[in-house]
Image (tube, rainbow, N blue to C red; front, side, top):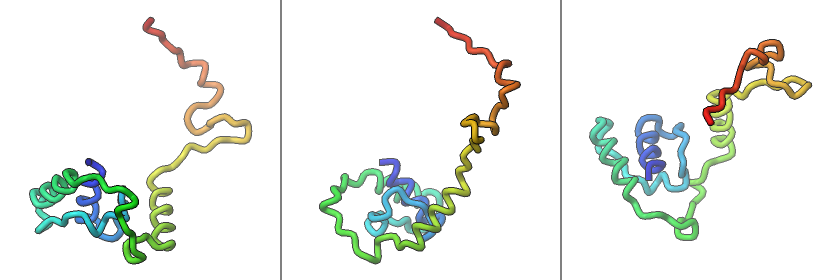
Length: 111
């Protein structure tokens, strides 16, 4: 699965600060022998080929679980990555197009 491959690469590159798709599986993921691209690719391929884990089969310990502080840090980091457009009180999105210029756009229907 590509998400597990991403987690392996992210852990190798960013370490404990990596934002993972499956943080509860981080201790089970293969680690590359070195930080060379080929080794990272090999470990990512091995992770992608791993069998699916059921939530019942995975026992998460407190050490594997994200702490509240880490979760807050990740949320702050995500909020810095993704900036949503501002919506004014009228419910209109003034960050993309103002109402004066909106009439300039025309929808073309190919059908």
